[in-house]
Length: 316
Length: 287
Image 1 (spheres, rainbow over the protein chains, first blue to last red):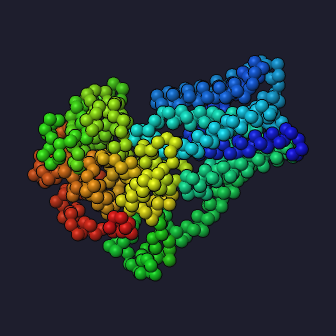
Image 2 (tube, helix red, strand yellow):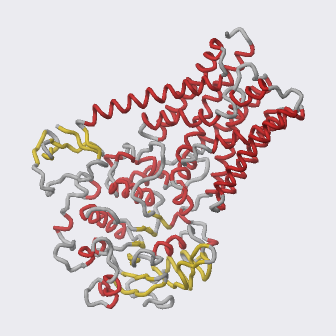
Image 3 (cartoon, rainbow over the protein chains, first blue to last red):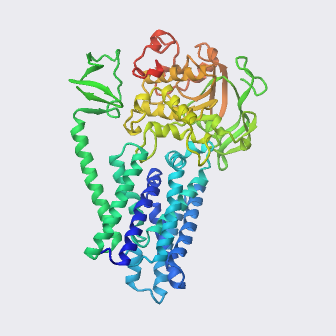
């Protein structure tokens, strides 16, 4: 498949998507805004359709539309009105409805064309697109990794960030613009309806496997790159839409990781008491029988011998 | 009641937080109405009152998290709107757990408290890292610094939030209900941690409905009810059963009225027994 120029472009685009989408997605998951990427994909569809209709560059018009949408979302959210939720929903519906109608109006607006924009296709990435995707990915990665501590802080606890004097609105708008750029990088290969899946699902894998933010990001990127490159290849052989194939692969990884993590905690659970289930901190005065055991002390608790180990107790 | 122009005798007279006829609220509704309060450097102030009395709103107003709709807030003598060194006031929110859906370690969360002191693109310096390590050390979580915060107990997560505030090396620490929902041993362990901060010369403003565990370190008790300050006394007077304010405090007990009486023999008192609880054992920093 590598002898075809379109496949080379598709695989390169897939690599860029696999790298950037999870890195931006980790902050969206942290902020519990996993669905914002979906909304931006909807808004970007109007941009793509405008580009198709006017014969201009769909990618650039989509970029302008989704950045405008992203800034609008953050401004609406920052105003904190009770109606913000509905306002966002209206904006997202408008985006997808406008896109469908505009593509229908354009001479090249075939159902196949629309479906390629919505669900991804491997044959559609042009060399011009690839240049834009490369530049965008470079900027998105530099900002998302370079400003990681700050984006982490504001996604982790917005109120604390505000109280300590950080520019919360600025950082939120920045994150929204990064999301918008990622939507555009993903639009050819993954498709506008499935974009946020590649931002979120790799991070869902990280959620069940990683212990730190840094390792979460690494796991998510590994899953993202693997799913998007392998999915693009698979879609060539199986003749399936690339976006759907990539996302199904990522979900398969998530299911395997979840089952593995569940089995591990079950196995571990018998010998391992999390502090959350066991808030009592053993000590000399706690009333549980203490037994010196090598370099530590075990406490007899409900017939188990508990030994403090970091944040939990092991049974000895 | 201590008025703005009459600083209490036990401080050095440098105001760090001043509310001047301040009203704080949302929209047209002021939750806190026309409150004046001055807190000086080195004070350890408990802000007490029943639920809904406005004590949390006062704190949110002075931190810039709730709109000040009337009067003025001054921080270190500067009107709050023009005060750009917010990191000088550390904030420990009222929360049982550390938020965030992505796994993160104690070290990562505490380090996020340092950012206010750092430039946007600059990597952390050795000094930044040292302050973060010290903050983790002070709250006794050195052994857990690489653990995911979601695996910690509620009391430990509370300490993570305190360490995060300390990472900016603030001069004032504002804490919202640090002992709520924490068992007696953990509350006393927390008080020991706070005692070290007071020794370092920090000013503490602690919103609480339970003054007993904090009694050893408090210098002053301010009572709030119905959005107004209704009492303000030095701690030694406020915490004595004869105090007029004590009636005010004890008329609105928290979950554990038994715990509110500082002279209760079952309650904590400074001394070897108080220092010998097992809550922080295994935490070298706190011993």
